[in-house]
Image 1 (tube, one colour):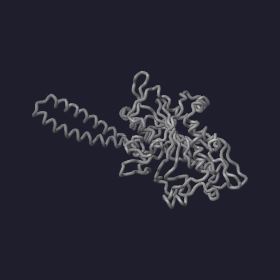
Image 2 (cartoon, helix red, strand yellow; image 1 turned 60 degrees about the vertical axis):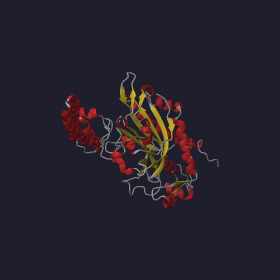
Image 3 (cartoon, one colour; image 1 turned 120 degrees about the vertical axis):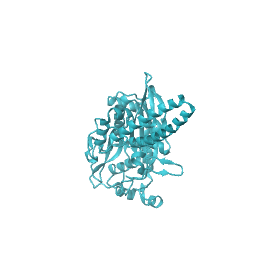
Image 4 (cartoon, helix red, strand yellow; image 1 turned 90 degrees about the horizontal axis):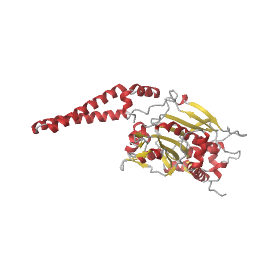
Length: 419
């Protein structure tokens, strides 16, 4: 949720941010609703005061007026907050202007482009002999956009999990990244967590998702719970209505969970295979931090992503997301796109966003400064590994002429298969 003070003091900034995103929102009408709501609140406060001082007969009369005013106030408040919740986060100045994903900005390309002395196969073609992914039987059991991971793919998933968790729970690793990139940040490692995958709708809404993407999530109506699309959505609400001490920040979490998405609006895209599926496993980074360090914390997340992908040995690029393609909750966003030889193009495998205080305001997560002031935290999220997409990127980039796949050197230590 955006800062109400910003709406009242600088509505033009909100309007400009929405325009950059290509979103039309009547900010003037929202400001008028806010004025009306505040006017009614003042009237209600005055009437309550009069009622206390009035004679019994007069108090009865005031009570009727008060009831009408309170009903009017409730109606206007609901309309106001419904409209307010539709406003996406305010973009940071460094976000480039663009209409859609074609205008995202490539910041750097990293690694060695794989060269083959044969025509590289797609991961689906490789899978015909490897039998790592079973889409046919998953279709029989669950329908389209599902897959069984089998054989070596299972060990590869476990290796990626152990690799990421060992790295990110190590202060030594964090210290290396922070020093290398000259970041002025604490080296506190990530706290490992396996969060619940079913959460209350109000928590999903407070994270800023149901307003913009409700068609993307699975609901269990009987229990009134939502299946998460990423563990970020259940890690953020962990500290709802809580206050940190400044010395506790940044509070970093590393979550692993299965994730569930309807993939609404993507019909016809990647209908075969496991690139875009309804259920997948993911390792997600999340941080609660002070506003003044959130840009550096966001950069840290990106540098961690780069280091993890580099260590595996994948060829990839870093993309800054433009205003027309950025997420609803994000004030700034980067993606990592990994090379898929069979398609001769880069495809998104990682994303990281600085959500500033947008989620924290809804969740009411604050911190107490050393000067005893209460402020809202900023939240940062980022993919460590989307497991399925990483596995198929490895399959394609590490394939051999005889249709096999080499296990990246850095993952062998974590690869449980002995033969």
